[in-house]
Length: 232
Length: 232
Image (cartoon, rainbow over all chains, first blue to last red; front, side):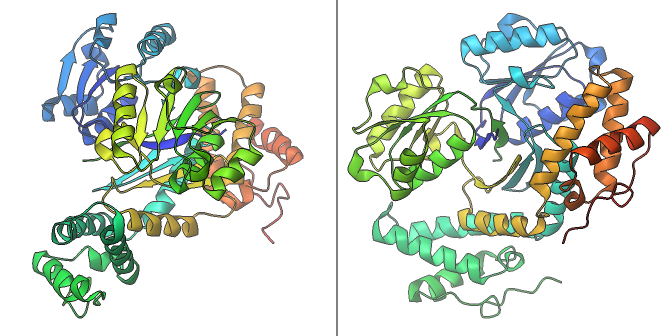
């Protein structure tokens, strides 16, 4: 059976992570990147070097050198456990269900509201590969094939088109309706006509010229016409 | 800011979808594939042809020809709205927050617990591309590049290795420990040595031979040694 792949929003949310080993250190990395605050509960002698590194370098982790306590769930918006004790982690999962807190128990699918997949992060671009637990190694192989197939500038191209769209909205404001459709149509034409590696190189003044010489005349200039340098 | 990409589990869960237009029809497709039951609430004259098609072909949708009512939330495990009325959809989102029901409001990011991305589904293989709202068109372009980079047999390869791993577990049971490590090592070697298009072709008797001649002797036979036919 398939899953519903979604991009969960964690900016300024609170995530409880129980365990500090290898798996937990990867979870911490993803959760910090998503902008959350972390409460990490784990005896100190079980901490993986990468977990220690996160503790040393992030000011968004509150660390408690002890096992899990039920009160840890009090302000949690999400709970991730990665400990060897099956009974304890299942007890945590049951408590989370009762409190309607989304929970993932590492290596125990039937106690999970959601799974993790093999992930790529490149600036605002994020890609997840899931095999629904059927082929973790193949998920990694596919992830590497995908990494090779994506232009190097993809993340930067997304960043720049996001900025351009914001400027376009300032110039031609309004939600939906005809102006919304015209904006979307022009952005789609631009993204189709330009290579991502060219979009990635757009600077401030070139964005203004794109809007002046392109949007205002309902055309899409070429990268060469705007003097966007080729990838060296 | 990045999101946390996750594979949400919906088997036998109840998802409320408010709205039946173009966007809603896509949501229905993903949610049905994830094994959920759907309650669809939308006046009949707003139904998209694809939504009608889903209603005609799935026995997992309960349809109500009317606008949203608060009681619709009573047994919902997840709520997705895709209607034009901003005030109504925000009211639904606020109610969901209070009830701790995960909610997505189409085109209204600040009222969403999670976003959707551009998706690929190929059997048990699922891939999501998210640009965190910054480049929906580029997300589609990247999705197509990914589709081209993945072997045609990827989904089938994952299905077959999943089956093989189950048989291996029957032959060499036990959770974790030395046997777990040896199983994982052998599966990784197999998935690394074989092309996905070859794994995809494995039949029942070849799987048995793989275990007899491979696993039992701690080696990984080649596809040719097992008589796996090349892709024609």
